[in-house]
Amino acid sequence: MASTQPPVSMSSSQHEATNLPRLVVAPNDDSEEWIRNLIHAPITEVDADVTVEEACDLLLSRNVPCLAVKSSDPSPLSFYSALFDFADVNAFLTFAATRHTYTSEFIDQHPRIAQILDAAKAGRVPVSLVSNLSEKNPLVELSHDANIIDLLGAFSNGVHRVLVKAPEDAPGPSHLGIVTDTRLLSYFATFARPSTPSGSAPSSPISFSPTPLSSGARFSPVSPSIPSSTTFQRYLGNTLQSLPLPSLNLYTDVIALRARADSVLDAMRMMSELGVSSVAVLDDETGSLLSAVSVTDIGRFVVPSQSNAVLHAPLQQLVAQIKLPDGWADGADRFPVYSVLPSTTLSYTMQKLLTTGAHRVFVTGDLQTMSPPNPSSPTGELIGVASIVDILSLFAILANVPNVDPTRMQRHRRASSASSQGSESGAFVDLSRRGLLGNKGSVHLARSGSVWSSRPAT
Image (cartoon, rainbow, N blue to C red):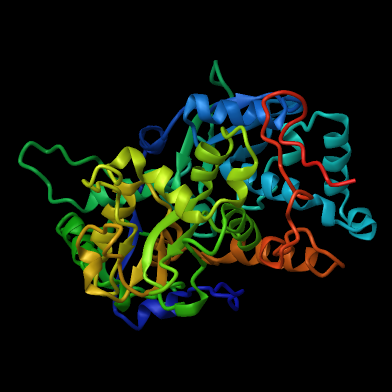
């Protein structure tokens, strides 16, 4: 149901045609204090030689989105070497489940794959080998005095988080913490709210000018007489269908799987191959949206399992397990609706993303999606996707950030997967649908011995 899309890159000219305002960054002497307020969490670090299993346990026990992997030879200029998150966990588990299909020629051409295989045979895979295996989790660092344009430049090209360095002469840790794309989206949502008499609205280094973008527009101070937050509120009142979102009208190319016919491993493989953080789960008969499964769900529900049977279970079983704490089983479904309509406003979409904690919501063409779903009344036809990266890319264009390309990292991952599949068997081939997995590709999630060691049949 998914296919590789042609390169999609938004340009300022797309916004010029719609006569939209431009985001203006005013001079701000307190930029370091501003970015400190955006920091989502302190950095959770891990040694490079810690095993993948130990690193995943740390992700779960600390309830953090990622770990910073220390450099083998740290220095003030290079304290961390990489990041490790649930997308990498998913990519590694998928790798383990399919590694018996690799040809010797393919392994010879991919030194990192060879290193992971050798480490697995030795019974200890260090996290440094698996960090950013997903190719969605690069290490990006910004200065302590970075501004909102620097953040938009990173997030509008597919990065989900950045590490903020401390001043070089400051005592203490080398970094102030992590700023996530979700945190920046939350900042924009807060900025758009009407100011209260008590003046509780946060101070901001940005304003929105009614002046449309022009080809040579750059950043400049804004007149105090311009009600910038009101201008931004009006902009957020636009519907999704009126905005140049790159994945709004994908239809059959939306990355989706069937609840009963497709397995957990199918979802893992598809997220790894296509470089996305979640897949839609559809009703087998109607094709309507039932739910979503993300790489975080894989980390929280699949990794703790003591049996590899979970990999071959139908997706509906994993969905039921995910929804269980939210009342699906007791008849009071409180599970968040991961869908919006083309006529939904950008503001409402932002709030839904922030409320659900998801990186993406699915766009459906059925009015029933406005009411909470339940097992007997699925939501409507799936037509597209709206993500945090897509929305921040819109803001980046308003700010005249150059080279905005929200699908760049996805395209890179898909090209990488396509290249690996060009070998005789490929790294992430669709084994389960061809009936090839069986016991050959079983992944043992035991807590003893090597980390999730795959045991090919002899």
